[in-house]
Amino acid sequence: MGEFELIRRCFMQAKQGAGVITGIGDDCAVLQVPAGQQLVVSIDTLVEGTHFLPGTPPAEVAYRLLGAAVSDLAAAAATPAWLTLALTLPRGDAAWLEPFAAALAERATELGMSLVGGDTTRGATLTLSAQVHGLVPEGQALLRSGARAGDRILVSGTLGDSRGGLETLLHPLPVDADVRYLQQRFHRPEPRVSLAQRLRSRVHAGLDISDGLLADLNHMLEASGVGAEVQQQRVPCSAALRRLYPQHASEWALSGGEDFELCLSVAAEQVRGCVAAAERLGIRLTEVGCITAEPGLRVLDEFGQPVEGLAQGYDHFKESS
Image (cartoon, rainbow, N blue to C red):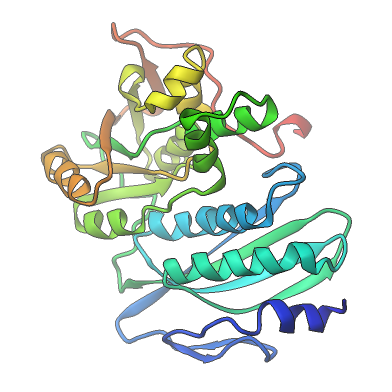
């Protein structure tokens, strides 16, 4: 099947939402940004064998791709709006592409997004890139650079689940409710869009947890020129992760990566209000530490002693550096 037939068959039926002047079918998408809004743009790439296992069902790849990409919009407290897609395919396989496209359209609709363009090419490794566009009221985008000494560090949901889900795929276990839960967390991350928007006015700085809590928190600290202390025993783990991997749960919660939860820096007096707002959305929000004036990131055990030798998180090029 040729490139244009693939596009026509799988993507031309995508619904066009608000602000789309011209979408799929032209050289460029033409989009209208509403008055008083700023455009927030991010891109995320998944490579078969690096971000998902060969043989992963195409629908799961679609959900993982959009969940990971839109999590960056959530980190900025932006409202998802538009999506462009670049696909590198080993072959024009409609049997793979059609269920991928159907799942992508379904998930985009759930997130309030329109697919407005993209590109397809042939290559040796299945590679998918989603560029996502969001809208945020002017001057209100949440950034990494606003953390202040004395702030409390809050994280949404539970951490380490995605790493646990990957482990169940690499080394299969008998399938039960815990295994299904962890695999769901790996394949279908849930970007915390509503939570970030609800908390935007209360938060000094934020980002999403993609490379692991310690690695991503370090990004915030560097951007803000501050340090932090994290209480290891406070970092939230799911019951499923603790039951299946009790010896690894705490480590994976700190460094496992790809949970796509939020890490927020919040003034101490705002913590209670943030937790209550999250509860109303049915989302767990946990205080795990504090921002310090002294640079550096320190992880403390239950006795207040430094924990040494922790992995800092995933780095694509670490082995070759």
